Image (cartoon, rainbow, N blue to C red; front, side):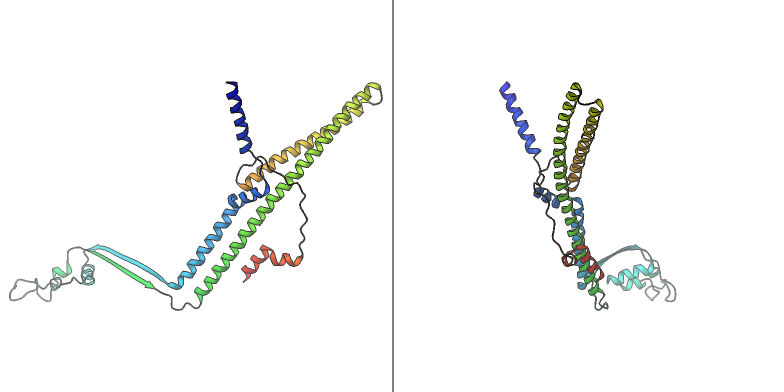
Length: 287
């Protein structure tokens, strides 16, 4: 029984270590490009701009409209019109059989309103039409509209690159900030250990008369300051983990901090003017 419990305990430890494995920077950047909500929104905006561009270009090919008319009326004009449209009108609809004649001396005189034409029964009407419209000349309106939509697509693409670059910078900066915090924590712990030794040494010196209690209080004050700084560093690390989790849209509890310091970039003014995304976007917007 003890052996089985031991095996289960080892399995639990192994599972926890796998699920809680530390995250390295390259993996974090890959997750960022897939999970970050702002990057997803930027990609959707770019996709919408591409759809708008296709929609604008499609106006050159015109449009097809399907129109369906459905009516039910006993109005004389409507009923007669329905029959004419459907090619179903007959001489009876003009009151031919009710008109006064030798065969029908009691009929309606020619100069009197006829019941068949003026008071018809209600009729149903169904009609379907297909209409195809092609723009002939719009004063280059459509051509310029397509050009604007292409520029909007380019701007949204630049916006997407800007968001991606910004989030990559924030993730990289967070990793190096975490390295700085952990390095500072390590140094402060060494200082705190030395202060503990100094505190013990001061107590011994007080016992033999080489130090005073005020010296011990001063040492303890220094120790309190170092402990407060350690607590601040601990809370900043916790806050930074929350920020990295927010950027990746995924809970992160441990990361592998970079071992080397971040090299200083060598960029001149010409490269900034040529490659800056904001400047490119401004130029496209102006055009």
